[in-house]
Length: 410
Image 1 (cartoon, rainbow, N blue to C red):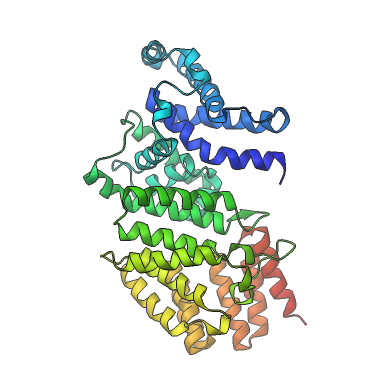
Image 2: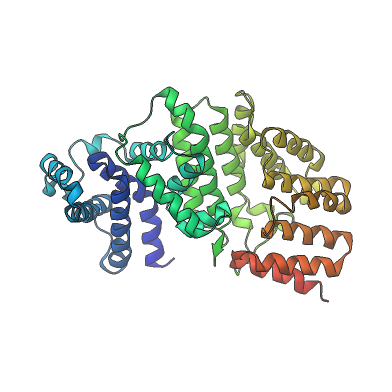
């Protein structure tokens, strides 16, 4: 791993902590987020060559605070609040954690920021976008890709969300408010995990730092809400899915599909923990979508060989899942289960119904190619794989889909 990559891995968990520290001191969420981004860029430029400072979090807070103060001075409308902040917090204090900061775990700041981004004044879409940006560290382009919307639309959504939370007190919500925000928080964490497990763009299939961060934050939320079945279920789902990550790519970074993976490379410790969490989550009523998805993942992980997979039980669980969350991707997963139980022709018949909600998405074309190949339609399968390859920005997925199409020319 290059020195720049190591620095980026270090910065990802520090970013929300630094933003939390600035927002807690000053407010000004939007300006603080901009200042933190500048500090992170400065770190990426300086640390690989000059070395990581002894107190990287303090360094980032100091640099970001100076950037923020510069922004506030340039804004006449904020001058009075800048002067108040300056009087309350001497600039020299930024060379190290502020008084009392060492007594407040950095994880608390990250969680507080997570719930702030899911404030009830924001729409669910804005909650997700803002948290992915501020806590998850995704770019606007990555967030837009995850939501299947234009980048300009997502940029406006993030900007409006920043304005709405400006001035909101930086503290963890009470139990009643916390429950209202939990659905959005879990959706955000799952999106962060998904972007890490299968990157929507770039040369790598797996962005391990994002997947690890999503798991870390979900563990933190579970410590806060240990009897919430949805939280337990989401953590189980992440662990059971991430357990396969080492086997998902070959020696040259190529994608290896689930049925061809070396299951000896799966993380059995994570599978054992995830399976235990599934059992716990299913006992924590009401049973929701995350618990059911985790149960599906457990069935995949428990199969010693691909042919041992209990597809009838998986199909039954997908039927339960769609009753709770009739999402397009869940419906696509059910199509695969239908094909494995009843044959590719049955799966293709149900795939047509997803043309509307998943129009233009590469996964729809990829599944179609797989089912057509199994059904013996070589020409149709090759065309579907080629179309899927043209619709994804992930280099490993493009290569895999192109390889499948090329293999059918023989």
